[in-house]
Amino acid sequence: MTLQTLPGKILDNAHHTLLLMQEGTAFHAVCVVNDSGIGNVRSKLCLIEKIASRKLDHGEVAFDGRVWITSSDLPRPGH
Image 1 (tube, rainbow, N blue to C red):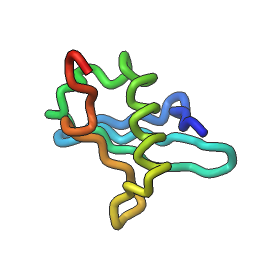
Image 2: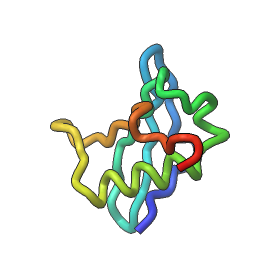
Image 3: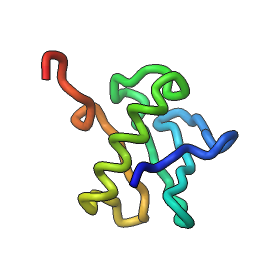
């Protein structure tokens, strides 16, 4: 299932952007590290939702229950 960002639930801070996403009846906090190379998070929500969904499906969740997206999670050019 694909996570979907909840409207108005994006919080920027100095180190990461926090998004609240929903999957069915469950809610998940997703953090995008600011130096991840994504750029403007709001313009790349579809990509972020796909990455977060994949990581959640594979159990890649931090100790605090958040899904973290870093530069290593981004597709490499040409792949």
